[in-house]
Length: 385
Image 1 (cartoon, one colour):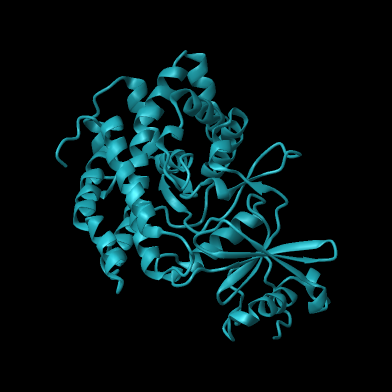
Image 2 (cartoon, helix red, strand yellow):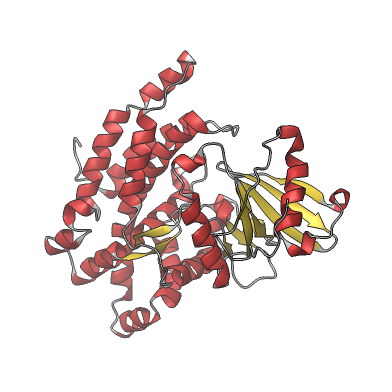
């Protein structure tokens, strides 16, 4: 491979025309070494035998490898099989490169046909239960606030319902030869899930209500509750997948590092909140771990300190902070319902395409069950949808 005068660093337009593993799975490690020697200058003169590769466990979308040479280290991300059907890899890489340039993301060293080389971050991914610890709630809130305050050069059209529509279409085409697996899929009742999506678009911001503007006009509640709901409906650059594995921490740090922006894009502010709170429940969807009001208050206060410090000061000065935070909890929890449908449909698509060893159909079932449970809690007036 040759990459004469090609600058890959923070350049999503430069793509090394090489697919890791194309020669066969047994050559995957050799291919990783070749890619990193081409893209990352610090590895350019390394003898392949002097490069160590370690498998990084935990991801259910991509395969991850850490490569080490002398005192240098980096990460290779191999895209999951067929993930290009629901992840635009050009947008994914443009997002990562831009955040790298701004110093918010790990270093973007460059991309190749079926993956990219990223800077290694010497922190450990959190476990779901750790995210509920007071110090982590505060640290995560601050980082999310910084991200939401960024103005990115991407289209500001909210991605929530567009992505759900893509997942719906792809999920509708999933069929299994295995009769047991097909039976499990049919029990999910996809047509019923689609009805719930349609209903949810009537109570959350969507094109059906001018992205929340019509909801605001008919809002019944206190002024602070209305202000909070409108705040959550605003469009901001969002991560859309802040689960524990995408939050790294090192005890020597004074912050957390949010990683993996492949689902990133402009979205309603509230989706990042509702989705993140769902991730406190882990892959087994233990809803007992969904953050309490007190925990959400702590998260939101820290969030406001970086996302909207002037608003925070105003609310504190006027004695309205608690009322505003209560409004965020009530309206924000409704976005958890969108998260359940989003990732439940995603899981069906993954079940039909992914080669990763994970029971995606059962995960979809858990997300849809969680929707029904939390629907009764967060929107008890909803009957027979």
